[in-house]
Length: 85
View 1 (cartoon, helix red, strand yellow):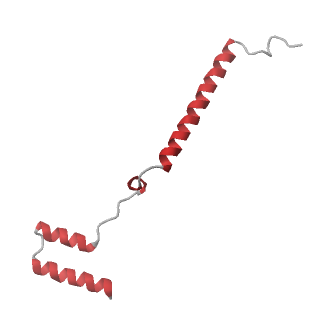
View 2 (tube, rainbow, N blue to C red; view 1 turned 90 degrees about the vertical axis):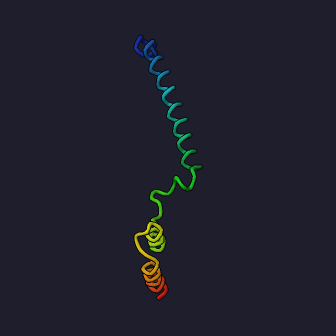
View 3 (cartoon, rainbow, N blue to C red; view 1 turned 120 degrees about the vertical axis):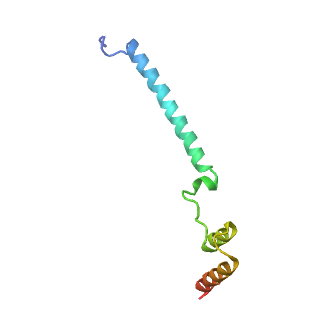
């Protein structure tokens, strides 16, 4: 009925065992990656940080001493009038 080429030989068992280990490793790795993707923190989800606003940049320049108080007040008034009107 069955001849010698139909049964699994020694190397067949080795490849079958290797395939089973590889299958379970990929399955567990996929499960772990899916859990990490689902339960990551919101900071990690944000691809790019939100750039600071114009008023924040102006305040930083004033704090570093690049502009004086009058120039800061004038530019701040211009920024606030441009956003409201």
